[in-house]
Amino acid sequence: MNPAELRTSLLEAPRHYGSAIPGTFTGASGSVARACAVQFSATVGADGLRDIRYLVFGGPDAIAACEYVARRALETTAVGSAQDWLEALALSRDALSTLLVVEDAWRALVAAATP
Image 1 (cartoon, rainbow, N blue to C red):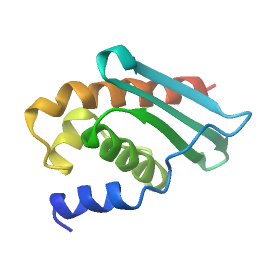
Image 2 (image 1 turned 120 degrees about the horizontal axis):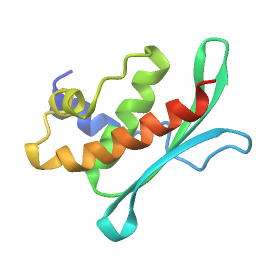
Image 3 (image 1 turned 90 degrees about the horizontal axis):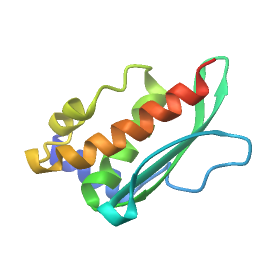
């Protein structure tokens, strides 16, 4: 699947968008005032993070990145960084600041969920 098709599929069929399940770990970054805010949540099992959810206030780049990260995290612990997601989703360099908010929220979740 090419990056444009991947982006479209992430936006058309988000599987992980939704409020945190009670008792989950969370990590957040950004602000509505700055036009991008992200919160990830997840439970932790023996095999790593599970039941990953996110809430996002931002444009399609932020939404696609959150969904991409959530899906990747269920496949591997190496979800990459903002720069990796920029390339995988073939986003313009202008999207990097948005992806850094997503990365900060993700790293905050991982830190909260790691003993």
